[in-house]
Image 1 (cartoon, rainbow, N blue to C red):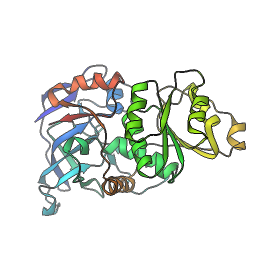
Image 2: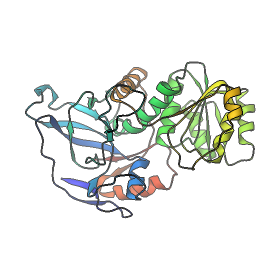
Image 3: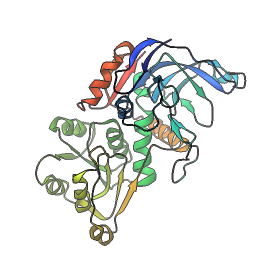
Image 4: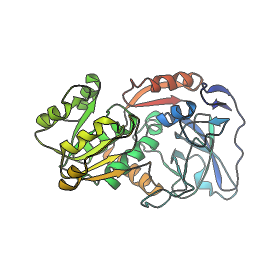
Length: 333
């Protein structure tokens, strides 16, 4: 089969022929119709991820058709159109992931290939939402699940609340924006790009602020005419301290990344305003099922930035690393 294979860190993945998976009795073979990239994939190629093994087919996001089944798998699975749950070994919605938890696409072989084998544990595969194309379905899993847990499980956003999503344009931030809007919240965003702020407004956000401008947080408070009940962040860094200033009394701040580095917070502001700070990572299989159910009920469609062929997918890594995308970078088979 054709696949995009990483042979060593700090090199580009290579489009090549790779051994087609052979199935165990509890596995199915999926012909991938579309896959999608995440920053996780880029970080692995750069050696910025623990426990990297090579050669490895990257890609945690994928959707396709079950074309072969193991001996222990019911016949009903054959020819099913499915979306792949990227979480392995985290079934129940527990407070934290299990110690042996892992993600599709490293250390197991991933979705940037013509075929992938998946062990059919509970909720490892779910039916592809009928209202989505293959490219849209492939864009859902990792980023959507991460946003869902941060927004609903951790921050417990409610209809009518004012929500701030930082760094709009990335996959998780956009899903958080779309999910919060669909849940009836009033959503505001930040970005270093005025164009991305305008694109978020076109999706239903109320407005935003450029975090590179001086006093952006004060400007945002004036525009929103009030503080924020929920703040979702992906970057950390020095700017994180401003979230305490613009959070409402009893506000909740959830973050799922730290690309801008560590941050300091004022304990006085935290306890006086009775703020809650939540770290969040990916999500369980139960949450993945809840997320896909939410997508079906709301008919939500993910934002796709660009679509690449598998043979050109190494260039898609560079496109994602440049940070200019608005939405998911998809690889179509």
